[in-house]
Image 1 (cartoon, rainbow, N blue to C red):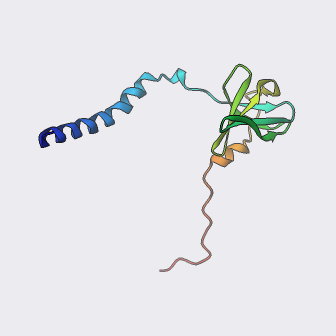
Image 2 (image 1 turned 90 degrees about the horizontal axis):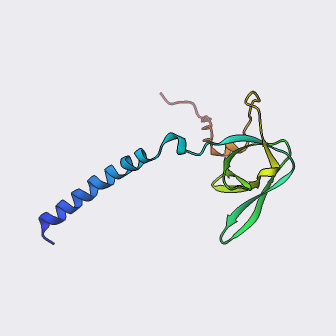
Image 3 (image 1 turned 45 degrees about the horizontal axis):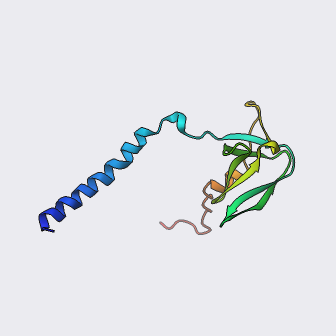
Length: 124
């Protein structure tokens, strides 16, 4: 390949890599985004996750706990925890009223930690 063609191919690749995400963003409407909703756990229930090739229980939620859920399958809701994704049976949770204040303990895992203040005074 001639040097001019290598430069042209490189520039074309850069331009395409910059334009491709913008083109894909236009294809997604706001309605197609999956909306999460808070739900209350009806009974103590296991949370399952796909580990390797197997779906295994990875934790449990307690009755009365509020969790942010995403629609997943006809029988399950999806929930996020740490870096993982879990599934819970739809019969084990129910939607909550909009007027109820939500305290999301699992959502705190995604928040940055506060930086501790230094014990040393600032130097002037």
